[in-house]
Length: 229
Image (cartoon, rainbow, N blue to C red):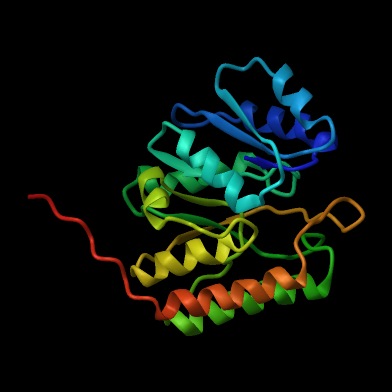
């Protein structure tokens, strides 16, 4: 869970994430990405043994926070959960079902953007445009590239070697998976978007960056897999 200046929502986000009845043992790795509000105090006051908290001295971006979390995690699988309450952690067991059933290794939560699930028309169109671009570039068909809910083996994410420090990590991770011919299995999830006034951070420039990253990843050669002696 990457966190940046979310003191108004963090306590509830932690409570919700830790209250879910998961079908396996879990740990919650939270990275405070240089917050200037009371985020650090909230994390330091949480005494749940499943929670590990790390603190960046300066804000480095979502991708950098996730990198810190992934380096510190000890489980077999990982899933990203933001602290802004847009995603419902009760959906995480749904993402685990295809893995536990042996149907998938990588699972994405697909947002429908129906009803009140988006704060603006252009936000939805931007998300759909980036996803469409990825499908064209990689001759694939996925429904929601920018979803936060990306579940995959921890070692697989580490092997992707994500360099993007900000929101570009979403496009980089998906581009690298598709380049390896790994197509995410998708399950529908609930989603409640917040507005700019409520703290929404992603911008149109992040969408442009995503297109550039996808283009770069499409034409970069697939890394050779290491083999044993």
